[in-house]
Length: 374
Image (tube, rainbow, N blue to C red; front, side, top):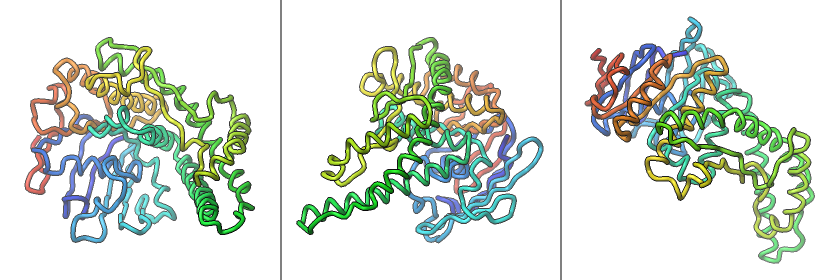
């Protein structure tokens, strides 16, 4: 799989930009602030319908414009597919797949398999559990796009259940009489159903991902070794199988009922879980050096890339401003790992930061333009 072209209209800093990429390595060179990351962010948006830099869509639309448009031509097995997204903050995105409109924007998920590593990924190691949950769930969707619906269903139920708990909590605070909780058990059942599906998928994913993380970290850190991941649930030890997970979730909700009423929020479910990261016997967060944390974050992305490749469709790999953070040895080891990618996009401010064996198509950015120079 590779991206043949990217066409942007009013996306970030670009009134209009058209880039024709090549299979194999593509290097985007330019000073900081000229829009290199904007290009790869657009590709990431096509793959995940979200930005790795911001939580909302508003910053993606160029100042003064009302809508941003991304058109991406993707080639797989000799066939080309066009994905088009229209981003209008405050409204549902509009999407076309193969030039035909689709009912929901998430129907385009799976058209582009992509793994993006960027400086922001240090938050996978040092940030809150929400960052690591997002990493798992986006990889789930990349492997099986139907999980976008599972995530949406779970989030919808969680929002409704939280609203009910919050209303009951506020009613109790102001002495507004008895709290109407007649529908809480209905939302419990929905939360358990969707939550068990999501939990089972995350557990399976972690088991498949773990050996790839260990291997990638060992390669990047030149034998540092000892990297491991493990799913950490607020439910404690988890049973095998969806039925067991469903039963445990339901029991945990019942046990937490009074605490949830006292706080007005759902305290049980996969939205409370984390992905544990360790180096040897110690957790990475709080103990790893900057270099170790950076290498672990990179290993998580490389592991995702290897896992997607093992599924039979090689994803596009993007390294956004990565080589500037690495010493010479790590640069070359990373180049050796990714040099065979079907398509690799690298951004850099200094051309010399990119190892010579990753030189392929070369683009220079500046003055709002993208110029092919090799």
